Image 1 (tube, rainbow, N blue to C red):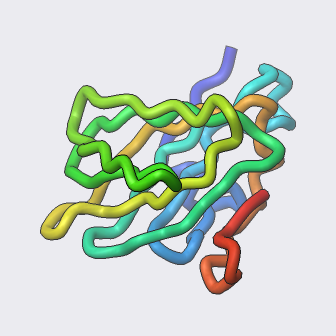
Image 2 (cartoon, rainbow, N blue to C red):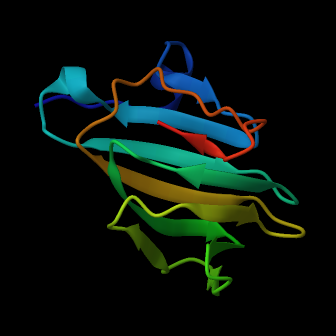
Length: 128
């Protein structure tokens, strides 16, 4: 068993500024659990075009507000208690709320190495 907290992660390479927010990589591939867990903050007023081509992801909202939009234009409001699941490597837009950051617990399978960062300037959106 081990215990890890946000402050501890912030002092390591597992704390990633990904462009429109931050990710505390609480559990990564090196932990040997077969999945990754991240505390993800999406800054208010930001829009990120994302796709995880090598990972499936589920995100559970624990604070704030925001929305996720699929590539068919369906927009889903996110608030505490909402979960969205990218079960087909779905390309999507992730938005922080107009006035509040969106705070998520993100679970990845297979697990992240922990150092991955988005390239939000890519024409096709960011992926890894």
